Image: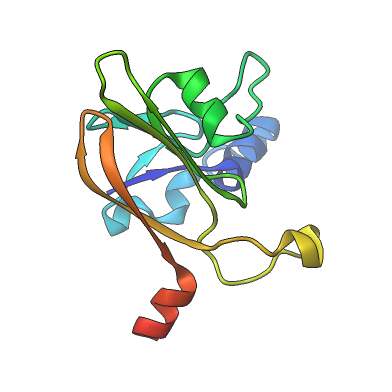
Length: 155
């Protein structure tokens, strides 16, 4: 199990870096992810598994801003990628010169609550998980599963 840290967890690191008094008092390890069996990947460091790159988000250039669409993600990174960060579900497909399928996915969000800062229109987005089947050399079959479905089936 891999967990890619996001900008919210990175607030801990930024706080420690900006205030030396916090060094040694708080840290990412306090979140306890490793205790639950996760391999924790630092913020914005991609992890590559079976030809797919995963990261909280992928940058679009030297300024470090996130790519803005799944299609751009394929164009910028030239390989299958999966990212979070944005409350949006998008998918784009492409092929390498050898015919191997490439897929880029913005996975959306996986929490039930609304965010006040997004307002009534901004909170109207897909929420769920993605299951990737038959992952090999960057190719896979993707299966989105909504939180609504999971709640109805398992709640």
